[in-house]
Image (cartoon, rainbow, N blue to C red; front, top):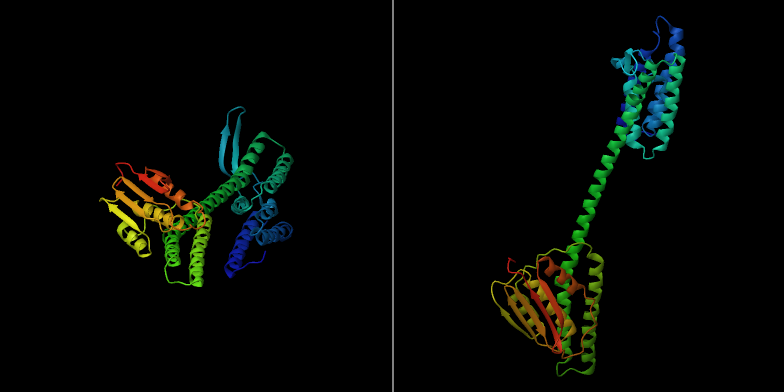
Length: 373
């Protein structure tokens, strides 16, 4: 019940003063009937103070404490009507109000707004119904009084509570939508990071393995240098595999379809500089997926067929990469995540991808639709 800010204290003090004035307006005049004021109004002011004190953390308790200030007078109402069916009744009060009704409605609304469990509110509502029924029976129990009681319970307790519940659920739904949007943004960013790691770092690690393999077979090296080059090649292969495992953990969600800002010619030149033997044939205009397809094929060739010559053919609607048998012992078998991601990219673009052994080596072919930009 501790107030965390001075503003909360000031607001609650003002609320108690207004509620006390309302309670005093409902009771005897302190100047003409001081005994009645002390017997009726002073206890109501004390109840008002208790209701304000507990109303911020437990609004349902405030509703029960303000029960004596509820709409039980039945003399003033929001509307007055005459009923002709099924019985004839005149001057029936609907939604009876008093000076404290606004505060009762407010705490009933806060109950629905802040309480998640429904059964305490249902139990309290039963107590309120019994109290109202006792008031009606004490006054004779006429049909008009029962109708007025029903409208009082609905207008002062049930409807505000249901409006509070509706508000709480709308806020919860908005919060869930916000959290869902943030989660989707995180997944997209993780997928982007995974794709960037695979497209750049994975390719560079494969080229390091190729250079280490070429160094391993260079003449003039002693046995320790050859062994060190072989260990470097295996370390690069192991690092590539660990990178693929990390990518598998990161890539939850759709990967972006944009390639790196590098054309196929520059990519092939970079691979040639690392020691790969590549024959390139490009027919313009090259499709947007060409860079990604060629990069994945060269990475796999460098890892699984070191030293093998590679042929790359790029046409507007067809991309084909073929490598011969490996000249040296290949690294560890890959996880297939790169090829699986590439197959999904091609599928989203409306094309087809075929990959498999061919003439002792490996061939990867992508066929693209005619309407692909």
